[in-house]
Length: 224
Image (tube, rainbow, N blue to C red; front, side, top):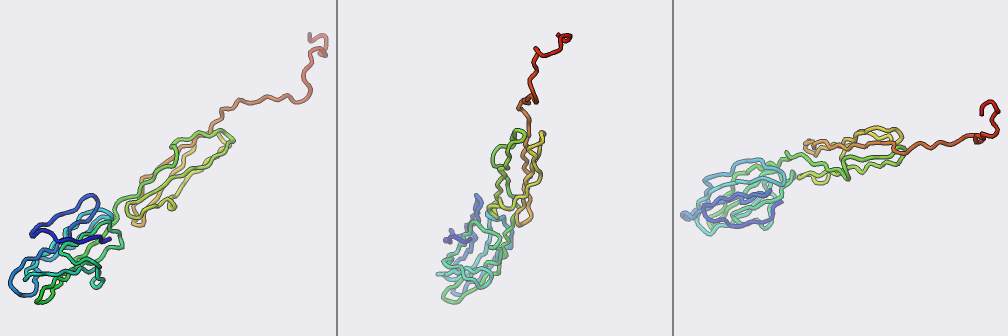
């Protein structure tokens, strides 16, 4: 989204870092008393969702003072964006579009070309297990999978989109594997995460006598 605008130093083109788009510059220099003339137009570019650097450079010659008004997709006025530098940050896929500025002085306005800014999502989501990766369950005991969470730098929380495969039979000792996968709306797949569930039998058997207890005194004499 667009957050602020400021006037750059003359001739200075700066770039952002730390996952933000910075300083899309409109450089203008006073020259004569004609309406502004843009001599260098901005170039189209693609940036990463919530990340990347913008270099929209354009140069104009005109008589000062100059005024600026930025627009998105041709006719959507960007409120409060009335300075020479357009600063944008945390852009999302919906911010893809064309950006232009109208530069004016007392002699009239001039409009820059539409600079196409494409916001892409090329970073895969990340899955994190809830709880340990290896669990031990006593045979015939209760088991409830604690699952996992998933987050994406562009799409946000994708936990509800996780697909879990595999099953656990708590009545049959052995190792079981649960797999967790998810993809973001752009089709980027997370690295698969797995959980091992070991169903074990550690309880000793219990012997129960059925019928009467053995009484040695009543055994036949020849067996003594």
